Length: 406
Length: 101
Image (cartoon, rainbow over all chains, first blue to last red; front, top):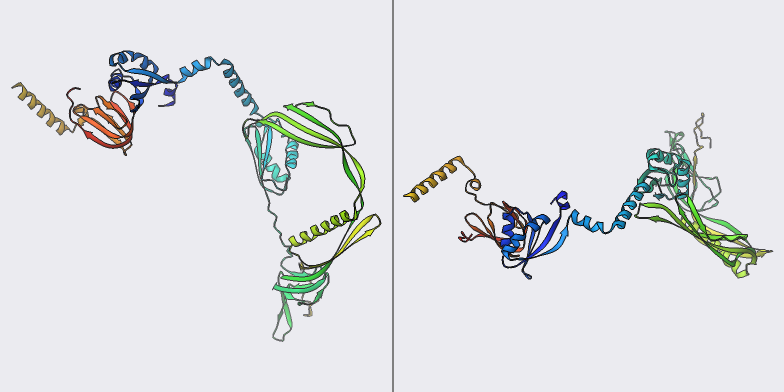
């Protein structure tokens, strides 16, 4: 049955009686098309579908065969229209709804951002606004390709951008560049130079000539591994250098001094108990605000925004915002000795955990907390093991007279 | 004498159709049965339905009766020259000519 045939008025009937098959044959003889014929043995009936006009014309066949016929269902457009005629308001409402949605879909009523990690939603919104794309912009005015290109130019971190519209939502999908620690290159002629003071406890040289050994004490700026590898002639004299990008894992034991100061007095936020709720309802560019805000020096606000939507991407320009305000005052307060110590220690622990995340091994720590007038001070000597060395261009060069200048 | 003449004519007609390779469904009104797996069956050039149940359907053909056995049998459509049966068909059997039809 094709779509056009489905529009026709059809009936599904139950035929009961001894001459069910005869009724079927008579329908065939009168050229009445019959389909979906099923037999129900339990109730001794045959269920079948036929056109309404054919069914009405088959009344003489019903009379002749003596079967009992019951209409089980009425399908098709004429029956549907008959039903709809009784529900005019519903139909008009549905039609107006469709027209409304059609007009709404001609504008952008919401933004959706996907794939941004470092770039915030607000940054992208600001960029879109600078390009004239705001809530309510007509979709036919949008130049998707220009927006994509503009996003890539505005934010160098973006490697790929896609702007597309679904329903009333403008979806901006971006992919950001993955940052990897790229070691600085100096045209492959580099030495490794110490960046801290300490004693070398382990050393694995991958490329270059080591200038220090395990147990040596190194200072800031000392060359640890040289990228210039000497080439000797038959007289065991340096005839030249082969230059490399010096690479080595050098672990030193070093001591670092940590200090932090905490003033014992501080300003504490004390809520006065004065609270207010502001409800803002909006449609398109119009806003209606219900409720008065608090007029105090310090007001803390928390807002929740809602937007009406029919489906995931069919956002409509009807907004609601509930803002809760609480008034507060600043009050001078003092930390107790215990509180101050806990705060300073937690600061130190945080610093140590950050170092551990960077691969630094903490060997020992000597912590002192002293009261210094109206403040508390923490001092810690942290013994740690860490990888050292930064790449610097090599200074070793062969001079005219065949000696190195270092 | 008349009967002999009729039989002779019939034999001649039979020979002629065989020589001309005419399809028998057109000449004699023989039925055409098409099966798709064991779930669909189409019969052309049938006469009427003798019995219709969920497990068996008997179709009257021009010179024979066809018994369709199976389960969950139903008639997808039922036109003047063609009938299509759907269900799990387990067997077809020709029952011989029915004089009453």
